[in-house]
Length: 339
Image (cartoon, rainbow, N blue to C red; front, side):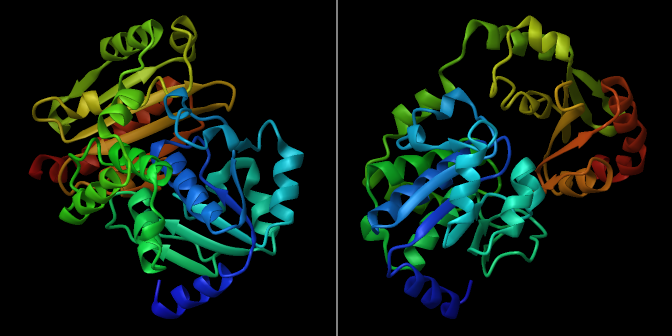
């Protein structure tokens, strides 16, 4: 995003606008944190702002200030589509291709609103008039902070904005341990704490709200953990039956894939989760070092993401998906063993 773009956006935001903010389907901490952080910032500028999510999101994010204002396209379709059709500006956050919004793809594609993308994933589509894309950033939440800074508005930071942005940076960096966490990330975090982000409370609200069933589901997942030592790979499966057994709620499987990656001598981890409602197997991939799960997911599982964290899906059965995954490992074996 160049100086001319910033000047143009400042001119747009100098007058009251009808603004819609949209994250990707199955929004995570960075998606919800960035949309709500931007929502509070733009609302302070006097704009009419709405956050529209494609579908539900984890309970451990529903305490973030402003979350009660979020509208869901899957259950409030007509209202959401009316807001999109009447929007002057649409911000798309934490994704870079409309298909990542599921059933919202068509209405977003057909909207005449000015599109502004803020995202840190690879290979963005060319749908936005203004694109702020940086794959080196830790999170979209960090980018929202820098977006405010570029517009000269960090003086507007308050506890609501700071809290929302802190959540996304914390979750997308694995509590600041991933390689994407830079000295600049820590500088931003310091500014957020100075402006009202209570780091202890935020961590407790996100990570310390396990239910008995979610811990039982974790135990089931770890029982299903398998290792392919020759490829330095670990994978986990969860069937629909197992999800039902432990009364699965959205967000209960968040982070489970990282247990596989925590094993000594493992550099690639995957989790395969059966979703019979959508007729797919949901896949999360994680890696260490320079091994690109983004490339693997794009090549084999209709997905993508970052070098060390990506997602995808499969239309095969759970068993067939795992077999496919294992069958492609030999082609990566040399690079995996060199990590």
